[in-house]
Image (cartoon, rainbow, N blue to C red; front, side):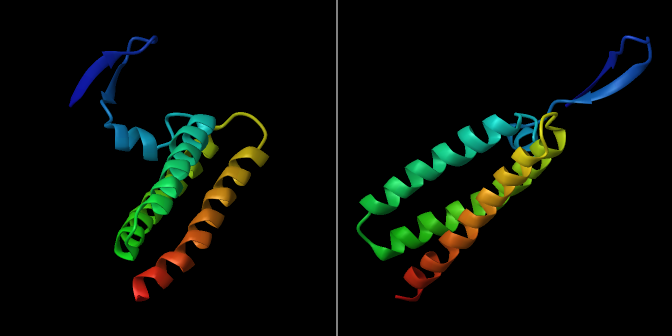
Length: 115
């Protein structure tokens, strides 16, 4: 949905009502919230779920879906980091931590998928 609004200088600008996914991947929630709320918290619960499920097939699919989510999270963190006004170290560290998690999680998930 698109609507026209007046800016402070009187000219018309177009605004687009973004979906949650669009806001998320555009980094609109900020770096800290994107990393901690959408990165660390889900990782905790996914790790817990993977320890609780009893079949290797379930572990594989939970892990595979979470890796796909983490790839989207990388985009969100990258974009949030570009908008971050503080030290450039924090966006870089956040991005590297998620990238390392993807790499770390990919091997075991692929091993489970072979059995």
